[in-house]
Amino acid sequence: MIRIYLVDDQLILRDGLQALLEAAGHEVVGASQDPTASVAEAQQRHADVMLLDLGLGERSGFEVLQELKRRNAVVRAIVLTMSAQPRHVAEAVRLGAYGYVLKDSGAPELLEAIKVVADGRRYFGPQVADLALRALTDDSPPDRFAALSPRERQIVTMVVNGLSSAAIGTQLHLSPKTVDTYRSRIMSKLGVTGVTALVRLAVREGLVES
Image (cartoon, rainbow, N blue to C red; front, top):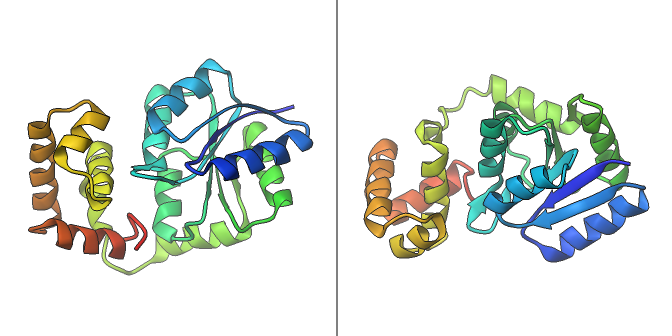
């Protein structure tokens, strides 16, 4: 029996995954859509594997991977996502993901990924392995968001989703002035002059969905 923690912003999907996993003999020890809470809870509940979506509403699963890596957490993360973008696969691997499974894969592949990762190995199916290879051999311009820190990426995602500096500050426990400073620094790094241009760039680079 493998102890699993779920991180996804869709309750119906979390419930469906829980039913599938428990029917397969595993134990779901917790679930959350909050990146901050999920890392602490997964560790407290001694999860072996975390199933992690990249899109968490106004936040990002990359934040979770970054925090797991920072804490040297024992729980091993499998990204379970709709995103088939090569750069997302590459970034997940860079941040320490043990596996990457597309949501349109079948249940047998997901269960196999969980088994492999719980055993300490990495799992990337043929389609995902091809995406990772494309990321390594892609001749397109470099990811302009690569220069941003995880916190800056987090704020970009929230800005693109329409949150004000005050709302972002409330969620991240920062002052609106500090958020404004982050926004100015981000605009400068990316070479854009307004939110509209930032949104277009974020969609084009695959940081957020259109």
